[in-house]
Length: 161
Length: 383
Image 1 (cartoon, rainbow over the protein chains, first blue to last red):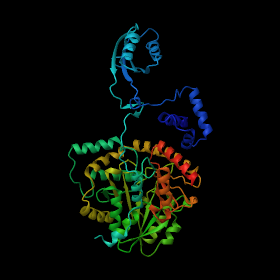
Image 2: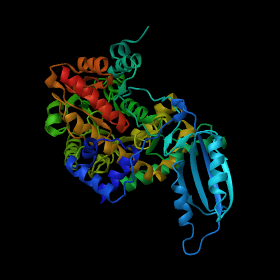
Image 3: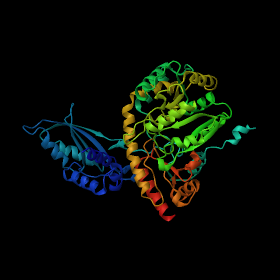
Image 4: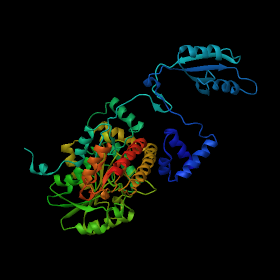
C-alpha cells in the first residue's frame, strides 16, 4: 500500500515517468509496477494522465475565468445535481463545492470573452437554483497544477566540490 | 610574487571542469556538490527577521551563544557528544573554515595527517598550507569505499599526528559502520592521535543506516574535533555557517586564529541557523527525494555497458567505476561532456585513488537524471 502511495506521488509529479524509472525507485519489477498502475487505473484512483500546457507560449489565444456561483440547495440532493451538470461542459476545467459567501467555484477555459459570457448568461444564469454569479477573468497565470508558468534561470553553479 | 608554498599547491581539479562545463551549452550537470533544494522557509524567514531587526553587527568570536546552545543540545541528543556551549563550540564561516582552523591549530611543520582517499578536495591542501604532510589511505571499492584499519596501520608513522574521518563521504557516498569507527578510535587512543571528524553529510543517509560520531566514543571526547555545518542537510550552502566542537584547548586555539582572521561568522546567517533545528520535517522530505534519485541513478548506471556502481549509503554522490572503458577519469569526463553533454567530476580530483572513477551527483532533478542516463547510454554504446 505504501508503494502504491509512492507510485501515485511520483506519477502525480510526472505522468510520463517510465515504468523502468519507477521500478528503480520503488525496488519493484517493471511487471509489478505495470500491474499496480493498471490496478490503480481500474479502481479509478488514477483518473487520467494529462499535460500542463503553456498555451500563451505556444501562441494560442485562450482565456481562463473563475466563476463563483451562489445556489439554492435542492431537496435531498444538495449541490450534487447542479455540480454534475456544470461539470459536463467541456469548457469547464474544475468544479468545487466550497464554504463562504458562494457555494460553487468553477474554472472555465474558453477561446475568448464571448465564450465565457455565453457560458454565464446562457448556461448558468437560467438554471432555477442559481441565485447569483461572480466572474473573475484571469489576467495572468503564474502556476497551474503545481507547475510554475514562468522560466527562471538557475543561479546554482554547474560544477562544485 | 606568490609564495613557494602556495605556488606548489595545485588548483582543484574541479575548477577545470567548472570552466569546461560553463563553455558548453545544453549540458546536464551531475557535477554539482550542493543541494538543489531551496533553504527551508523558517530558516529564510529568520534571516530576513535578523536583517529587519538590525542584527547586523559582529557576534562573539565563538559565535552567537543562542546558536551554540542549540548546537550543544543537538550534539547531546543526536550525536551523544556532551560539550559546554561556552568554550567547546566555535561557529565558523562554513565547515571549510573549521577544517582550515583545526589544521592550523594542531599541526606543526612535518606532522603527518592520514587522509582518506578519495575524499573532499580541501583536506590535503589544508594540511599543506600548514606545512603538514597529508598521507593518503585508500578507500577501496571492494570494501564499499569504507576505510580499513589495516590500511591505516600501513601508513602510520611516528610523525602521524591526526586522522581525518569523513563519513558520509564525498565523493563516494560511503558511510563508516560503528565497528569501523571503533577500530579507528582504538588506534587513535593507542597511538595518541587526534581525530578530525567531518560529519557534514550526517543527515543524508539511506537504507536505515545509522550515523555514529566518533567523538562520542569512550576516550575520544578529548581527542576528537568534530566539524559539521548546515550546508548539506539544510540546503544552506550560500549562508556559510559551520561549527567545530571537541577538546576545549583546541577549540580555543582555533578561536584565536578565527578571532584575528575572520572575527566572527556572518551574523545574519547565524541567526538564521538557529531555526534549522526546527526544520527536521524539511530535511526528511529532502532525504526521501534524494533516496528516489539515488536508486534511479545507481540502478541506471549499473545497466550501462562498461560501468559499475556501488550503491552509496550517504551524501548525494555516486562513484561509478569506469576502468573497463580503458580511459583515465579525466579523459572520460572530458569526452562525456563533449560528446554527450553530461558533466561529471573526474575521480582523481578527489585523490589518486579516485582514478578510474567519476563522481555523479544526484542532487539533480529526476527528469535530468533520466535524461543524463539516456545520453550516457548512447555515449557508452558508441565508445
